[in-house]
Image (cartoon, rainbow, N blue to C red; front, side, top):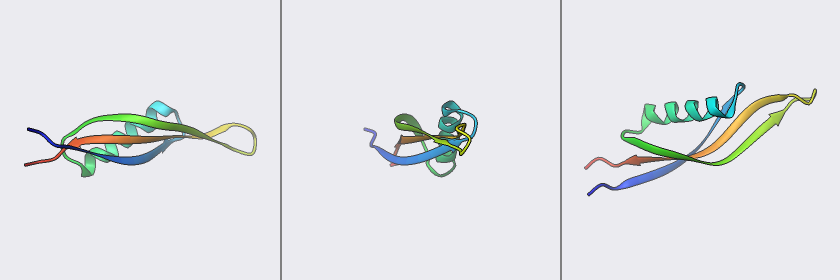
Length: 68
């Protein structure tokens, strides 16, 4: 039997939501073993004073399997 756990994190990118998701998963894999899935809870953007998007952010939950 496997037991999983979730952790929540926020990741950001100046490029896109997709890039922010990839950065978040890559960062989680540095410290968590057996990462198996993720889901996006929220997306937001930051807009600079000129009205342009300056940053894409995702709030995500990462699921990983605990070792026995």
